[in-house]
Length: 271
Ligand SMILES: C[S@@+](CC[C@H](N)C(=O)[O-])C[C@H]1O[C@@H](n2cnc3c(N)ncnc32)[C@H](O)[C@@H]1O
Image 1: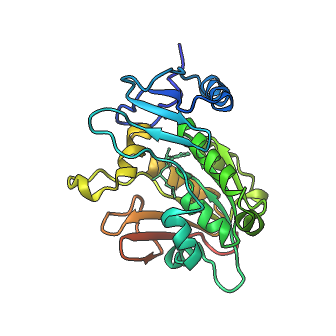
Image 2 (image 1 turned 30 degrees about the vertical axis):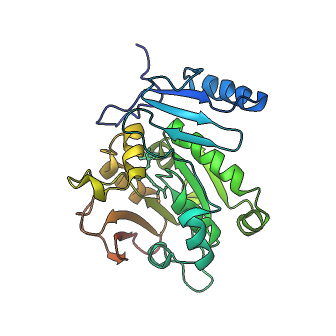
Image 3 (image 1 turned 60 degrees about the vertical axis):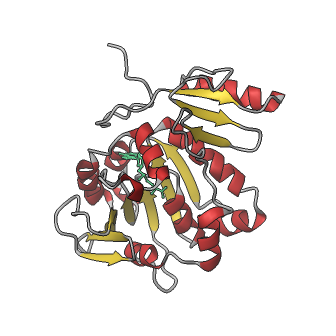
């Protein structure tokens, strides 16, 4: 039996877009990188944007995800240096996330981010001093994430601040957590599954809609939570839209800000 195409996570419930790699800049480095990436991911490498549903656009400066066509939106790339994340980083505005994972005083838990996506939460936690293993199962998102981290680490301020505390792993977190031996188990498992699709599409960020087209829905999030609860030493934190129901049972407590709620499931003491 042939295995499913790599971009289709085993649990995806909607049809993910077919993807091709496109070297957008004509220089040699860009062409080589596109060919390598296409081979590594098992994707076609195309000479023009054409009518492919989705493109991993290889530019000299960075890697982007784009959906060409009549309703094309701005291409997506991972940016830890500028943009909203850079702004928030400079102002240190991640209060409820920090509170949810249990950072207080000098305490910096070891976190396994089980749903790394574009790596923003993982980056915030590592930047704040936590040791973070960021796990992502989609090969396309993982490539974007790797590219973003690589570029961020060229910034001396970020490289010095994060050091080797942010590690990336392409895998299904359920497998990683099932294998995590008690002595290497993370203090905190962080879970941020794709938000449920809302009818008011305008309210869902364009970026999230783009992600959904690649990874589908994370319908197996309740199972991930169960596995996480077995593996975490201290707590599991689940990020949810503020008014959405919890994905598991009632959490031990919640931390929230204007739009987001963090459901915190505490493990029993003495583990
Ligand atoms: C909403 S995004 C996460 C966004 C991320 N917190 C950020 O700050 O950019 C959810 C991601 O989790 C990934 N994911 C869901 N279940 C997973 C699993 N079992 N193992 C690894 N990755 C998973 C999806 O592929 C998707 O990229």
